[in-house]
Length: 198
Length: 261
Image (cartoon, rainbow over all chains, first blue to last red; front, side, top):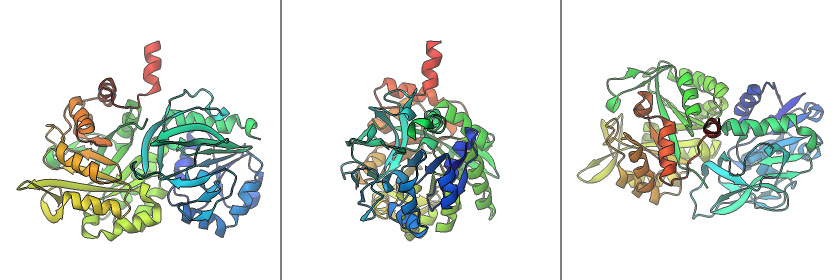
């Protein structure tokens, strides 16, 4: 199985690579469209500023390629947010795969939302064997609202999408690569039970 | 519900872990990666590695450490010590660290906070603030408490927040290394003043101290070093105590399984 990580100024590429290595997977890290198209799994990581992330994938042209990918694609954190319709942080349109505007948490809550929070209403094969109420690691200031594509919810002053799913695209707001053994199980489900995302 | 976090801090010198009362009389407490992995298994929510090596090579040892830690450990970790530029910070993240911590550098040049947060995002920037009271006024101090600055603790923390840092690591030099409890009042004042999480540090001695810093000090996370390094307290015991007292805590699955068996 060939797993590709999309190369751009994402910040957490090394962490994701290490997490895959711990699962016995050696990913290729690439921004080459051919490499990405022929991979069996594609991971779109991300952390940090959505505006600069968006510029980065616009510069290398991947903003047009990513929506066309047909294999299972896992988008993490800012990667997920870039799939949204509109990004408040960047004041720009995203790729529009996930419904909703990516908004900043209300000022009543401390931002960034940092730490281990529980998730519920889990309904995706990536959560197979994961208990309702499990704790996962989040660190973000913006979120996608709960909608029809939501397959996992987290509450932080308001409910928001911890996970969303559209066809072959699985998007996670938390960091599975930093969420201990539970995060590792979620990554493993995506990698090895990925047929259900095709 | 978002949990309160328990964070062991590993002070690292020449690639080895150290910690002593009030930063003096340092004692060797093992390999940082091994110890970090042990803490992660014990239920640590994050790890902080602070390089206190006083040489120009320290950035290299710190980046080597970040690389080694990231390979083994599957929870978030922060590295600090000797980070002076945006480039230094970026390279730590490239090596797999989740956050960098800056202290004196930020006091001397607050613009660095804005610059790193702008480049790498707020979530990557922890500003460490060491405080001590002078005639009832909590002031920012540097160099392990030896140097007093002209900054008031609360004012400086507000500036750190406004400049885009993602977290404040607040160390009370009154409590640090004494095991007599956290400084609750200043922790609460700062935590309630800023819109970013506050990690309280300095003074942890008993599980009740941790309860107090969360319940009364309003801290979002608590950091400790020696009580964990020397086995005075186990992370898992502290977390179970806090959970039993009604605080939201992440208790590891493994624990439940063991009970079932």
